[in-house]
Amino acid sequence: MSRWAIPDWLEVEVKARDKACVYCGTQLIEQVPPQGPRKAVATWEHIINDANLVTRENIARCCVACNSSKGTKRLADWLKSSYCKKHGINKDTVAEVVKDSLRANP
Ligand SMILES: [Zn+2]
Image (cartoon, rainbow, N blue to C red; front, side, top):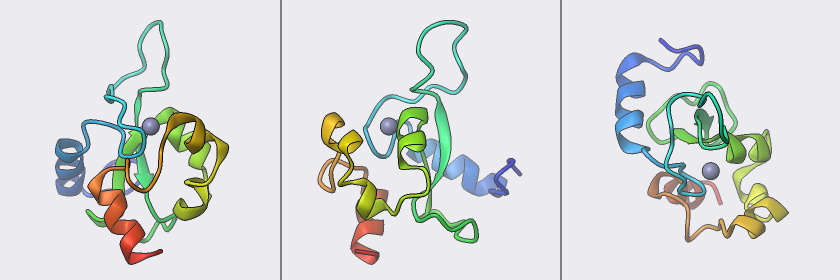
């Protein structure tokens, strides 16, 4: 179990699926580099901010930069933020798992 109470099997599955940030597509790195930017470090993300939704549809990996920008915002609201505009992130550029979540929860 990870500190976010994600079962091991799900952690393995999501790590295999999300090699890049599900939002901005940055190639994820596993550990904070000794020097250099840490914004590409992988973090665990609940696409819908509900700690009880621990499913392959709601658990994803994204970069530190997107995670801290999204915070507790609803996905649909965050996609309208200046961060997403600046980084060219929208409903058409995000990963499939995020698109599925948007379709299910518009
Ligand atoms: Zn990102």
